[in-house]
Length: 413
Image (tube, rainbow, N blue to C red; front, top):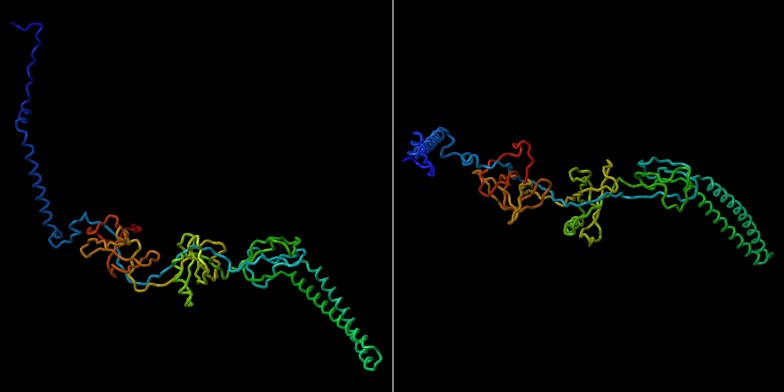
């Protein structure tokens, strides 16, 4: 009897392909090729290594480790002298500053200078109309001539009275009166002489000359203006720039060695640099220091003198100052970038003979520019790392190169 309509139709199972059934029965045979391939690769590696003469027992450990060696830039420590500088911030100031004013009242008749001109002491700067003072001078001379004539006549009368008194022809009182008259006229002549000298001095003041040598600034009054002795601004300003002064400050802790050197009479060299601190502008010497310390900043103010023959320094210019205090001679010197700082202090990475790096603790002395002196922990000739130390640890294999081998790279810390 066939199936009824209510019974579901049974599906026959699908027949698997012969190859699929074959792979299902042998699932582990495909893994047999992996050990064979690994053995073949190891044999080839051993064969190539045996043909390379550099892979023997005596080969360089750094060359054997190839990719594990860290490329670094390294230089040998050298022996030499390193200067000890004290640095500070300073400003340029003229050695002397003079504001030229008129000492008499009058019309500014002539300007005899150019703005910015360098003048020498005694050079004519300006003239004031001298005619009123010339008239006063001549009046004083006339007054003196009149008083001198009166004095001469009084002296003649005095001689006559003395003769008459000896002859008992006049009273003593008349003689004494004439003596007083002569003295009075003598005083008048001296007063006239003083008036003449004052008038001559006023004429001198009409010619304004330079009291010092220096550079003239911008003129403050034009020719033709009326000037007075009590004017506040003056006519011009002269600043002495040869020599010129530089004021700078150093911390109070650095003051004792400077005072010690000054007491011995030494002239300490001072160098002035531009605002960036890279270009040297001028060289001078330390003149003196202030007599007190600024309590608000804890610094002391020093004054240096520069000849300034080339006018490289200008008043109120900002400069960086270096004071040469001493020279550390015969010390071990390394580049300053080689010195590292860690929890245990300063150290450098030294390249040993087996081309491995060693973190060597050192005692660092004074530094100058890109150089640093090492007091303890390093010997002359030892190789120190100056670039690439950020990838190093003590015992790391290194491949040292000179700084120039890196294509002109700037050493980095």
